[in-house]
Image (cartoon, rainbow, N blue to C red; front, side):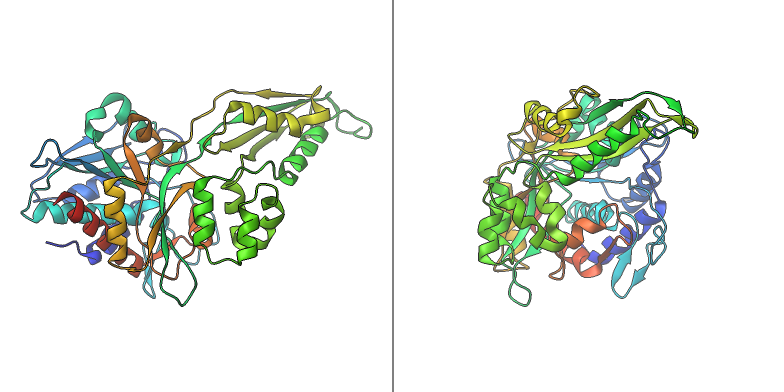
Length: 443
């Protein structure tokens, strides 16, 4: 029994309509709604599964088909059920799951309910197929990815690690075709790793005073504003990774531009020529600093004596806390007597190798649909649940397969953005590629 992409479309619509919005609070998310949807989808299928619920409503479903050979490699399909919130400006109801001109609209369509739905459909099809896989096949629909996974994969790894005891994992962020428009697709992305977080806080000190006499005051807001301007104006020192080189080589770009994009001394000047890819390209070649929470003052008629800037800092493989400290010290510069840098949490970027047997199976699956394509292994600027698993020795890949009209810039824009959507052709390709890869590797 082969997987049916029409089931993927219908299941995706249901998951979107469940509106499992995770705002970072323990009571949000309520992924139990989508767990119940999946339980209904699997009804009547002879599979073993567990539902874990670390906090009320924060549920994950983990199902396993036990393989026939205990020594064979095992695979998990891991998708998250939570989504981020929405703002005004959508063309269609963000939780309606509407189909308009062959496109499914809604929050989570790309991140990552479409892939989660395809995983469920493929898992069910294999369970019903009558042929037992050689190695175990796991389907994990998890909570809380959008808040770091503390009530999802992080909790499972800490408390029920056997549920995710596998050799390989497929998760989000992959499958974008690369190449020249109108020509056969030459490459398709697969995510093999991700940057790590190193959050910091800048605390700026001034002198409080009455808001009616601002001229000549020592407001903490002034040096804070100067720091913000420096952060946004400083590209930083470039670091060229093997993954960035691979992406540039496969991209549809002028050869002269390609040479500059892989030259640490010239890449910063070249970034502006990439249009919508500029931000992505910078993130893939730099330690990044995003000042996302800025506070100053407590009352409108009081000049603030303290301001704080909370920084989302992300580091590339090979970078460490020392790189963060050096970069931030350079930004603070002559304001050092007024600014303190707080926090020392520094994660470790995680990367899986591209030369594994399962990676080869993923490439063969892609080539059934894009015969001329090779996989291009990338790291991603954000984080996924895979970061919980790679340190355990599990090889994790972001995989799917999008239709030829997609590009990296469009894909990144829809993550957490307005008008998130996915075309039915991409859902068909993703369902088929997952099915092909698993049957190739496990059956």
